[in-house]
Image (cartoon, rainbow, N blue to C red; front, side, top):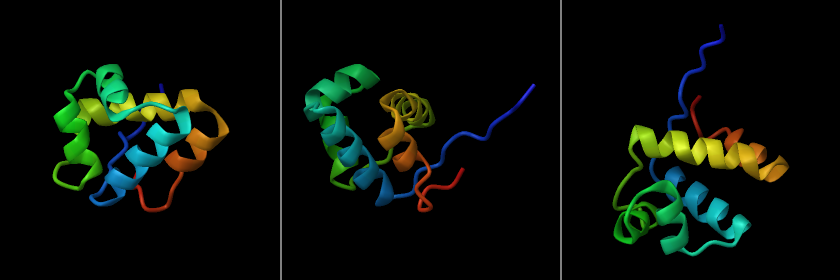
Length: 83
């Protein structure tokens, strides 16, 4: 059994990561918020560095990055993120 440590996103890296991921998949803040199960205002706060994703949201973001493919893995392996 392999146990992996959850992704830990630091602020302001979270804002950059979320913004870049959202732009890569072509979603609006509202669409990504719906996909992650949060409100538009929550997504807006994350992207404007006024808030940080919850651990559950981070798990969903990580899963979405893995589904994106090579670019998602590149973003996920960003040295500014601590694994």
